[in-house]
Amino acid sequence: MKVISVRVVSSAKRDEVLKEDGEFRVYVRAPAVGGKANDAVVKLLAEFFGVRRNRVRIVKGVRSRNKVIEIDT
Image 1 (tube, rainbow, N blue to C red):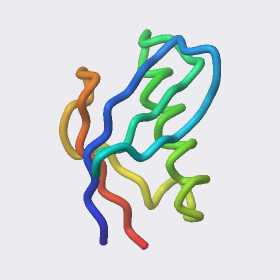
Image 2: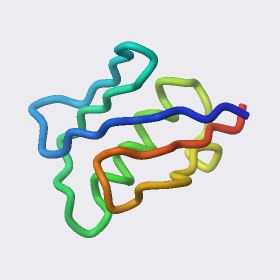
Image 3: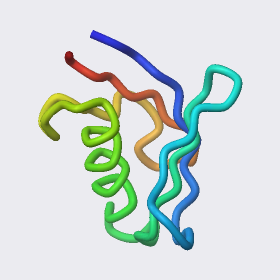
């Protein structure tokens, strides 16, 4: 199991995962309305780490830009 810190930028021009100084920065096109951005973050991180979506979970920061994500590998 891996736990990572993520900074989310919603309503971005692209969907992308970047790793900067030990922290992940996730850009998603989805707006931060109705959980759409969180769903997009989970999907994008699952693709990035090569795991299924149900193996990625937001542990902390569901309503924040800064999140703690748990990835069950």
